[in-house]
Length: 248
Image 1 (cartoon, rainbow, N blue to C red):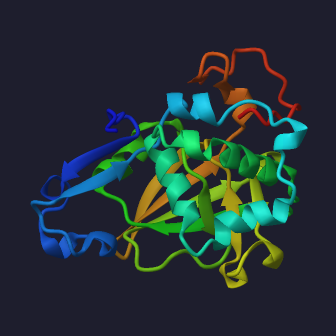
Image 2: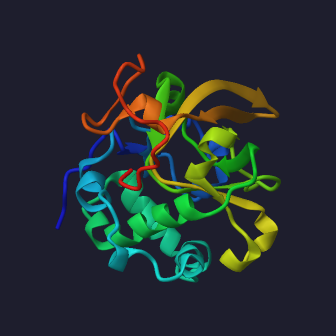
């Protein structure tokens, strides 16, 4: 069944609207022609309705993962790229989230319950269109709907953009260090960031033709009013910053 795409999350556009010639195409879409369509995924300022419907709420004891290690390994190491399936559904706020809702809640829970000793800057290489970059730059505070895999040392190479994310001790509980027991790829030095984390765009730089997008992981409870599903820039609503809420 087809459904209407929410252009705040996802948009199909002609390649020629984003890139002027074949030589400027990122590696991930190099096989497309300028007349083909490509997809843009955007950061958002409200949580998607399908996410709220299928991926929110408390986990009852019988819904919690029986093994946090196995829950995380399903994301990091599934040979059929299960991680891509759930991240595409999150990024588009697709009705397909009805299939993945319990697992997404379990993975959020697993991240929140795992130790996180690392603080500092993590990196992710990604191919981005000019419209995607502009959306990051236009929004002061925003969510990235998908789970985000980053590295402390080895971002994905060969991409046209490199995202830097500063993680402070206060909000490192929204991330987890992927230990060797969690993955078949321990050499990646991975830090996994939860879905719908809140970020602030600090600046965009250029280096050797690559955009460097610098973000900061922000205080979720201070700036997001989950009752109204809106980011509050004035920090004026009453909430308890100390209570970690697994409903997010």
